[in-house]
Amino acid sequence: MRANAAIRPNVIWSMSVLRRWLASVVLVVLAAGVLALPSTAASPTADRPYGLKVPAGYDGSHPVPLVVLLHGYGSNGAQQAGYFGLPAEADKAGFLLAYPDGTRDRLSRRFWNATDACCDFFHSGVDDVAYLDAVIAEISSKYPIDPARIYVVGHSNGAFMAHRYACDRASKVAAIVTLAGMQWKDPGKCPAGSPVSLLHVHGRNDMTISYEGGATPEGAYPGAVETVDEWAAKDGCTGALGVTGRKLDLDQSIPGAETDEATWSGCPSGVADSLWTIEGGGHVPAFNGNWAPAIWDFLAAHPKEASAS
Image 1 (cartoon, one colour):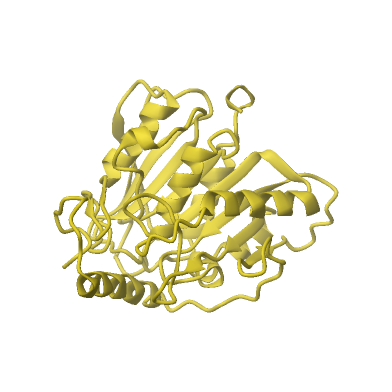
Image 2 (cartoon, one colour; image 1 turned 45 degrees about the horizontal axis):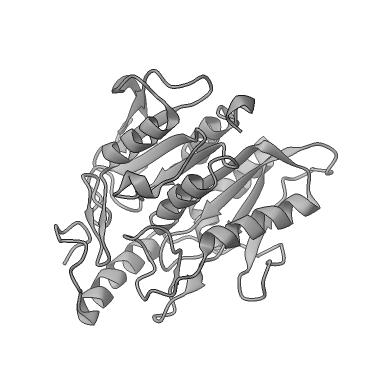
C-alpha cells in the first residue's frame, strides 16, 4: 500500500504493511546516492550526534546565521547534507550548518518524532523538539549565532520535523524550507504564535508523500497547498496563494525550468509563505547546482522581524 492511500488515521495497520511502507521510504532515500560527510561536532548526548559545518575562513568575530538540516526517514544528517549540497553553500554564503541525526527505531532506521503522521511508527515518544533545542543551544554557546537568523530545512520526515519545530518554537525560528513533508493535518496542533516564513517544495508526482495529501500508516497529513495555507493563516497573511510566473530549473532529470512558484499575498512585512511545485518531480528530486543557492536565497531574505520575536 502506498503512503498516499486514503485511510482513516485510527486504522490499526499490520506489521507487514508497516514494514512494506517503511521499506518504500528507505528505498527512495537511498536512491539519492549521496556520500556521508564527517561529523565535526560533539553531540549534546552520547547517542545523539550531530555534524557541524563551519564556513571556510570564519574566525568567530561576528554573528552568523545557523541552518539546521533534518534528514529523511532512514537516512542521516551527513547524507542529507551531501544530497542538498549545503556544505559548499555554507562556505560560499557564510552560515553555520548543523546536520543532526534522528534516533533509531526498532528496524534500526533513523527517524524524527514529528507529527502524528510521521514518523515515530513504534511510539517511542522521543522528544525531538527538546533535542533540537539542545543542539541549537550548544552551538550558540560555542559560536556567535545571530538570533534573528536561525533557520530549519528538512526533507520528508525531516520536513515534517521542520514544521513541528517551527510550530513549537516559532519565536526562535525565522524561516523554514521543507521538501516533501507536511504540517499537522489538524492546524490546532501547531501553536505557532510568531510568524515563520515558509518555502515548501514538492514534486507533483511524489508517490511517497502525496502532493495532494494522504496518510502514512500512522495518520493523515495535508497536501502541499493546504500546508502553505495553514502557515499563511498563522502568519497573518490576508490575501491568497497565487502563481507568480517565476519558473526555476532545479531538477536535472526534467528538461527546462520545471518548477513553478506560487506565493501568498498580504503577508506581514518580512514574512513569506511560498510553494515551489516541481512538475514531474518525485520524492527525491535529482537536484542540480541551482538548488542549494535557491533555498539559501529564500532563507537569507527572511530573517526574524524584531516585532515578531
